[in-house]
Image (tube, rainbow, N blue to C red; front, side, top):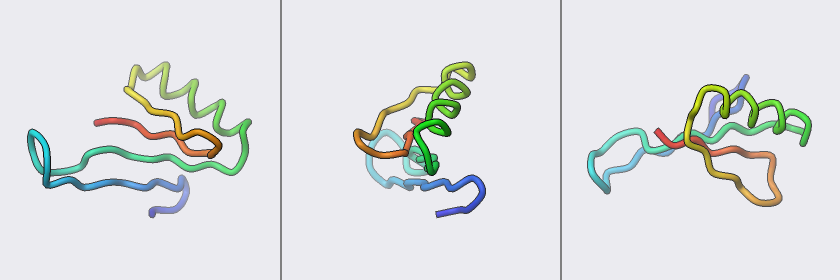
Length: 60
């Protein structure tokens, strides 16, 4: 995981092509998650919610 911002990334060798599959942005609070959701929506990036977590997954 990278720090500031905290980013988890997944590398896949399965599927259509090998490489970076998705990024997970982790924050400390629901308020920070709300801001991140808004920024990702504005950028029109596909995203997936992680229930009961302060983590937002963004597809590439």
